[in-house]
Structures are given as structure tokens and as C-alpha cells.
Length: 197
Image (cartoon, rainbow, N blue to C red; front, top):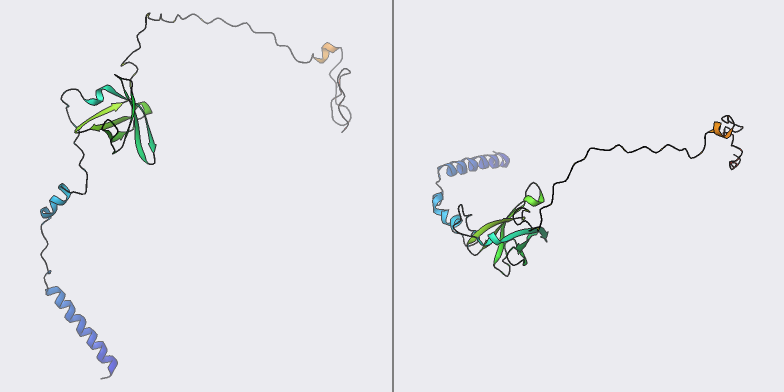
């Protein structure tokens, strides 16, 4: 038996032994059940917990006196411009960080149009929604109601007579000039002559 055949047999035997060992061996450590890890994703110290949205808020919310004046983005962070309807004070709220009043943005819900956009705000443990103020919410008081516009039938506008810039050739007492030499029309006697071709 030569050395090459011996090496081939050795590797074949070694692979059979390793496969049979792997098939017969049990895992070194038993895997724990999945509920064992549930506290890691339920009460993780590495995530922030937002408050659940209230289904039916009890009593007035801090957002009842606020209206949305605009929403824009600065460095990838959403910013809402808020107007306090009682004091007319303007403030800004940012996503995730509290402003001087302790208000922060939880969620921005864009609408079909800009005036349909809504922003969910959070102050302490209370959350509420604000939107753009509707014109009919606080109508401006007027001393006198404006009368309805009257409609009148349309009156045809008289057409002005069409006046050409130059009088027709028949009005000048001559026939329409035909083409002259060089393919240009003959100039009327009172016209400025064209340069030669």
C-alpha cells in the first residue's frame, strides 16, 4: 500500500467518525423557553415608553386651547408651530424633545392636504391631537351681515369695428401689386422701399 492510498483511507475513516459523533451528540446546553426572554422586550431599560393614546379622554385637555399654525422639518426633525388661542402666544414643539411648556410631538399624521395635517402632542402623561384652526370655529364678529350678491343677466358688449392697420389696396386706387423682380411684392408708392436682395 502506498502512501497516497493510505492518506485517502485515513481521511475517509476520519470523516465517518466525525459524522457519527456529531449525530449522536446532544447540544451542550439546553435552550431556554422563549417566555424566559419576554422581560427583555417588555421592560427593556434601553427603550423609551410612550404613553398609550387615550381612547376617551376625561375632561378638557391642554390641546383644547391650541391650534396648529404650521409644520416643518429642521435637520430631519419635525417641528410644529402652535398658537394658544386664549393668549395668542406662538410656540414650537419638536419631535421627542420638550419645549419650555413641557410639550413635545409624539406623532405627525399628514393629511390629503396641508390643512388636514394633525399632530399628536404630549405634556407629562397627557396626550392630545391638534390641527389647523378651522375658519368656522372662531368666526370674526361683524357689525353687519353682508347682503347676498345680486345676479344680473349678462349684457352683450358691443363689438368695435375692425380697422386694419393699412388700408386695403383697392382703397388706395390701385390693384393689388403683383410680385416684382426678385420674388418680392411691389411696394406701394407711399411705402419705404426694401433694400436690394
